[in-house]
Image (tube, rainbow, N blue to C red):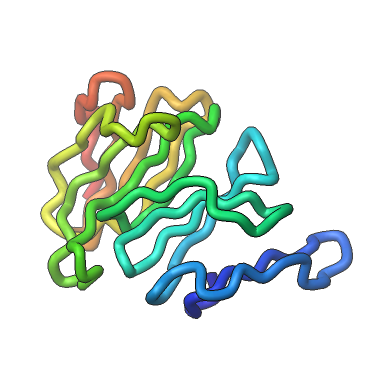
Length: 155
């Protein structure tokens, strides 16, 4: 992250730079997340509308998903929660949907649609059965990840 197009990974024990993945995206990288099940796998979300999965040890790209601006991996590492983005990555045209995407196949498992503004954050519950999403519309919504049912809206 760090606002550049590159990704920097730091060794938390020493504080030293462990790896740089140069030009990982074509635009600002607002978010990176490690897989909760494999610390060698990193997901990055760019304003360029891409989510990229990386092998941190080699610096190689594993997979890419288009039209996304947020990357949150489920506790089991099999699902990515994303916010839809325009192709140009223009924040003013970002939709208020959260997509739950199967990491292996790249298919959308569930679409969560109720926000009226850009979804800027999301977090899975510990067991992965629920996800909370926060939006510039001023709401936080809690969803059932298997059915897509909206469980609660907090304003």
